[in-house]
Amino acid sequence: METTKKAQMIMTWILRWYTVTDFDLTIIWHLLTLQMPHLSSQVPLHPR
Image (cartoon, rainbow, N blue to C red):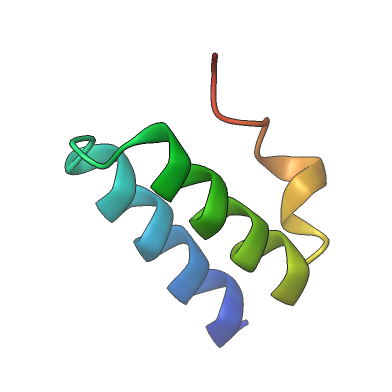
């Protein structure tokens, strides 16, 4: 599915540029999980 591919690209980009703050990560994570709830079962909550 196109949406899942885009989500994986976003997650890869976030992990690659892990300079964003935890607050930003939390917001991005919630936005992703709100749009695609099935992601939460595949990707564990970011550590910490």
